[in-house]
Image (spheres, each protein chain N blue to C red):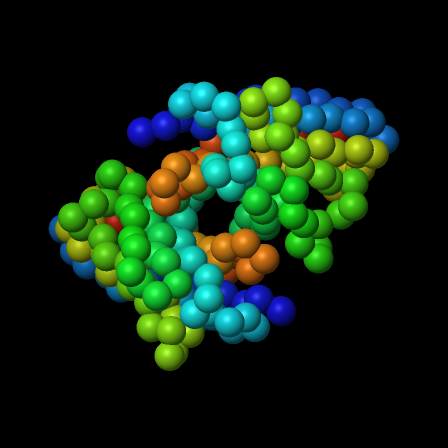
Length: 115
Length: 109
């Protein structure tokens, strides 16, 4: 069974940084694209970034380009999101999401950016 | 950036059939957009129902099915039940970039 567990969220001031982690289990992590998706309070999901199986291809939503960095460690079955220069509008629950037959969601981690 | 469109709201009677659609501002939705469908109930994380147009997860009720219909991705619910009342989101992939639709609020009434 696919299991994804996000961690690393918290309260941070504008301009600050956070590093999110997602621990994956129950599937062959290294053979699936992985994504980060966020959901602001009362809004629909917004895709943030994704990364190919071997890390050779990465894409970001325009609003986070140059500020966020997605990465993965296949040896540790882990996905990461380094978030710098955080803005109030980055406040959301952040989820990691698998792909294809392993497209399950974690429970998310809350990131609050507030003065 | 492409815009993905969904019906803001739909209502279905218990036992009835309803089709939700997912369109693209760039033209017809194709298999190359790898359409996914998600269900989200209040206070819960989303759950993936359908991936790559038609594929279901083990937890996807048989009454849900995915297809391409009239240039859009479609999610059909046949035999609606009260527990299907939820928000439904689709997403499409554009050369690696993923765009979510705004969601459809489905009411079973």
